[in-house]
Amino acid sequence: MKRVQFSSASLPYLYLLPQLAIIVIFFYWPSVQAIQSSFYLEDPFGFSSTFVGLDNYTDVLESSSYAEIARFTVVFTLLVTFLSLSLALLFAVKADAVLKGSSSYKTLLMWVYAVAPPVAGLMGVMFFDMHIGPFLKFADAVGWDFRIGLDYFDTAFAMVVISVWKQIPYNFIFFLSGLQAIPKSLREAGAIDCRSGFRRFWTITLPLLAPTAFFLLIINMTYALFDTFGIVDVVVKDKAANNPITLVYKVYMDGFRGGDIGGSSAQSVILMAVVFVLTIFQFRFIERRVHYN
Amino acid sequence: MYRTRITDHLILILGSLMMIGPVAVLFLTSTHDAVEVHRHGLMASWGGHFLETYNKVLFEPGGFTGQATGMRMLMNSMILGIGFAVGKIVLSMLAAYAIVYFRFRMGTFFFWVIFTTLLLPLEVRIVPSYEVVQKLGMINTYQGMIVPLLASATGTFYFRQFFKSVPDELLEAARIDGAGPWKFFIDILVPISKTMIAAIFIIMFVYGWNQYLWPMMMTSEEVYFTLVRGIKQIMLVWVGSQIPDYNEAFALAVLAMLPPVIVVVVFQSWFIKGLTESDK
Image (cartoon, each protein chain N blue to C red):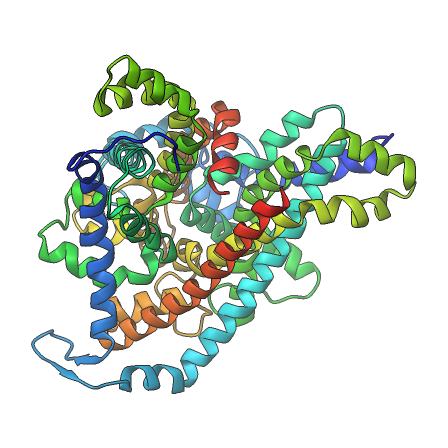
């Protein structure tokens, strides 16, 4: 905090008021309501609701379809996180290494950041489309009967590819700026002591990038859990029947399509707990990182 | 020292192609007519129907939506993107100013009230949020689209970090010269935050423009559809028709990504600085 500060009885409250008002109305009110309605069973028309205790939670946690969706979400999250991080790291290391054209590569690799997830989804759907998609010719050639939207595995495959493609630029930007922050003297010392470029990368560069990588790990997990909603929605086109969906998509489907407010709220609360744990993890780490620097 | 190898460039070129390729194909295909696309698949060549298709998508109502022209959707996207970015900057600068520059009893408490919002993204509390907005009668309004999105602390966190790095001497000097809190904020703090404001504006504009789920729930009337929201409509029509208007769908998708891409590419250095420094 500042050494010198203003002291005023009313001004700070006045400055905080707009932000606080919006947060209370649009954050705390709905969050409390989610927790509250997760204990009630509401009839689909919203006329009455009865207190059912933890029934919504046990229903959700015992349902086999929820377990399957949870399993898919975990696999999806791990795949998207791992693939987009490693590809981005590869590109960042190379873009940092080349002397010529570095800034052009940087622009070419980062601009997809600005593309909205559902737009990326639309492009993916056309790429994997059964009538017009170029991917089908390739799949045919290797004897893969690829059917997006009909085959569970194929749809999941397309979702992962699109989500990774969309997330590479974000990771790339952070890895590259992390790499560029490594002092030149350190690199030169490394180059003198160790001739193998590969070993130098593992023993010097990667440990120095670890804070960035850890930060990105959490961000990527939240991306795969929540921000991929637009991609999932465009790929499954409202027909979730046999298609893989993520947990957030299930909250939306049950709440808006199914009219199961109680069950959907219970799912929301479960997800809140997951994000809560992830974020606490992140905050603790950030505090540690400050010590490093 | 390290010598650049051919493989480095090869990997980077492949990566760049991977990023550019799909978008280039999307654009080129949008210049062909629908029957041709249906018959031959995606195109990697210029089709010659560019003006015709984009003119239709931008100015003629119908096609995917009954009432909204592409122009109207472009305008709605602009309102959402700019409205969200400006709202975010104003709210979070004021809140961060109060937290950093004032000594008051509830300071720490309010700090936590605001920063707890970082814990839960809107997607998680989407159903109850919808109900709240419905109770307030804000469905199918611009306020309903923008204001609930402002209920998060990202901007406040960022400006708080920045204000803390501003030298104390500035405030001391201003106080000696007799400047009050508001004058100090407007005449000194806002001007020295200019590049930070620009960076945050770009990030928030892109974020607002690219919103999908929330505008989808908030708007049932087509006059309020944004371009990104329009993608949903494209997909619905796609499922139902014999030969979908691929060209128009793709043209709309191109329009939906053009403004944020231009902003990010043109203001690249500000944007990257803002992004990598604010998220720490």
